[in-house]
Amino acid sequence: YLKLHDMDRLLHIMGDNLRSFLYNLDYLHAHLADTFKSASFPHFRLEDVTDGSDAFLLHYTSTRGPLLAPFVKGLVCAISTELYKTEADIRVETNDTGAVFHIQMPTVAAEETAAAPAGAEVAEEEELGGYERGAALLADR
Image (cartoon, rainbow, N blue to C red; front, side, top):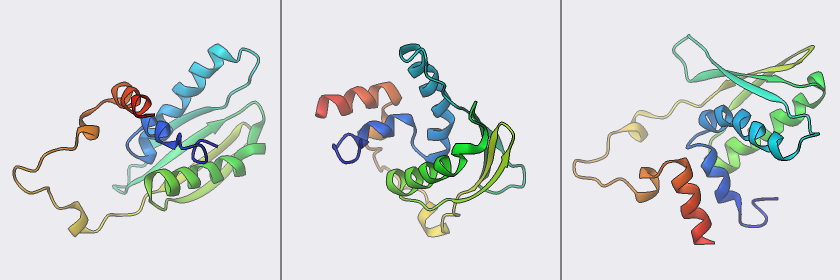
């Protein structure tokens, strides 16, 4: 819906990458719960994988149990692809209260991770924090 109505830029407020987006998702749901008192929002928690890779775990807990785990996987895949232009490898393990998503981010080629040349300027958008970036995006509308 947001993408179809040219508001997908607002999703960038949630984070600069998939990991930060998912980290902030529980905060978004907590904020929405203040407005939608009778709604039952799921909870999300990130956990680092200690194998030295770019992998992490997303713990999903819901009063609906694992029922919506396939839907959540689809949303995470779409956010990764559409918002951050990256293909995450996601494996799901369901449990009684929800699911654990094993998310492996692609490794970036060495030439893509080279440091910026000396004197290169940081784009204004990169300097802005989440709230400031959101205000700037809203001002552009």
